[in-house]
Length: 267
Image (cartoon, rainbow, N blue to C red; front, side):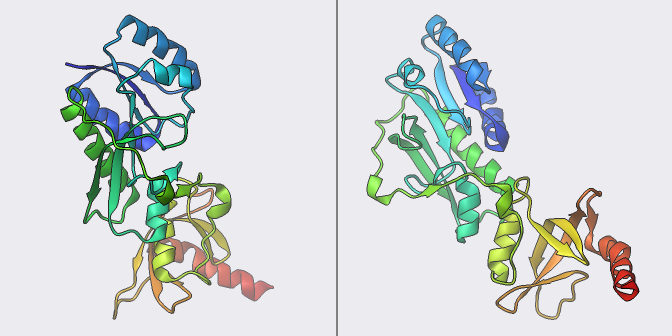
């Protein structure tokens, strides 16, 4: 069983690690910059140990990269590199309207996501659900690594001319703008912003985190509607008034609609 030093945080790392632990012996899980000292100590003690990374969120110094040469630290990156380099490849692909989602296994380099590629694949037919996309891509990349760790191919350099970049999600992005976005664009933001930065919209004067929604079908009536700029309507399925527990749309309307209109009449 191959020995592995794993670097990672967050959902991508969680799903990747579950796969790797089944096939390899993970001798250390680095989660922070402070853990890099232990990484160096273990690599010196066990030189055959491989390095695998998934969403670490910390810049790896060149001095650490060098001790894993010549194969390098294998980075599971959820995009078809050189597209979507950066911190939010899955979210950016969802918002961009991508129908299919990809994962690359690359050799970690000093420049962000710029290292040569060992492997890439695109998964078709995934549900438009953030957790499912994270899990499928993490598993696909990690499974390939486990099968090929002892016989890696020669990595292929990326085409820098085709590189695109995506930054971190932040709280300023969370407020939905259906007044200017289509229903498709709004729905994709709702999906992409789950967990963080959390998609928000005010209903009956109450700021809410939208947890689930779908495109309103012909002839369908929604308990809670969100009209969008293209005339299409999203049906809100589940939401969470800020500071309150999550609830379905019917419970929200029953609890807040009358209060809102009573307040308006009192003004």
